[in-house]
Length: 404
Image (cartoon, rainbow, N blue to C red):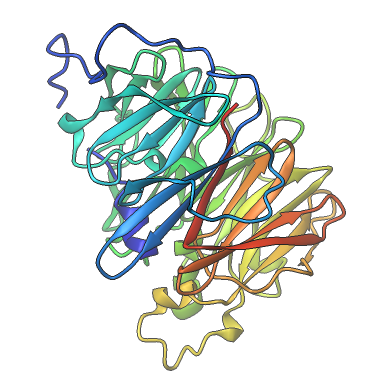
């Protein structure tokens, strides 16, 4: 389920140049101001069966959630995604190439404000394949290009073509655009990595390229070569330094195949467009030889990442090496940015891949699926490096954001 959900977000001839409006909402333009002043938080869960999938969005007044149920939730068909810009909630359709905008009133009522239709670019428009930077939306198209759209007017500006310097394929592997978890904005720059893999996301090239977009021109101003496979996760520290690492897919091959590229982390110093060679390291160097994913800085010189404890995998009986990473064989480790020392974080159960880490009001929450993805457990990572178990919820707890 994880594989199909994530791969479904790869999106797709611009016939819109002066041809028609991409805003399917009716009437005059709606207000771009938030529909209230009270804080509002949204929590999204994906519930799947063998026959169907549905996404549920719950609202809360505070990030101090103690339980999640679907009695008052809004249901969307398929695998949807959410994001917020200017106090408005954006929801991607799980069944059509639409991104819908909603105003949310003080008493948590939904106001339909129209949508952006990406039908000319493929059959889906998942927000996990989108990103926002400098008040613009950027949707992946054909892996290497972007469709630029305006979340305020719900119109499409046009398609940007990737630099000719971007390698389309490498060593028999196809170029891939990373997902929203790897997109990060810094001033007038938008950093978005590319990498190369096979169709099963099992074999990866040993390098990636980080595209640096100019949000004024929407063009790539530079490509940063990074000596790590599958860069698909980004994080930023208190000083504006950027950190890029792989997602869970790249961890499988090094466990089962000798010579496969090892997972690692690169740093781009604040104000530069180059990799800091003094910081780059393999996860295995600090985890007693284990592969890992998703390097996340949480401030105060501390970071964490997810470690694949392959000693818990029965490699002899695993029918598909890649499926092994979806079992409860992962643990979180903390990392000291100064000493580069890592150690397991106590108080968090082992979990499956496909988790989400989110920072809300300066607090770090971990949304961890169980191996069958039928339920999830949410934790808060505390400033002292320990974790607090908050609640268990139905389905795959996939997103937790502040709307306003």
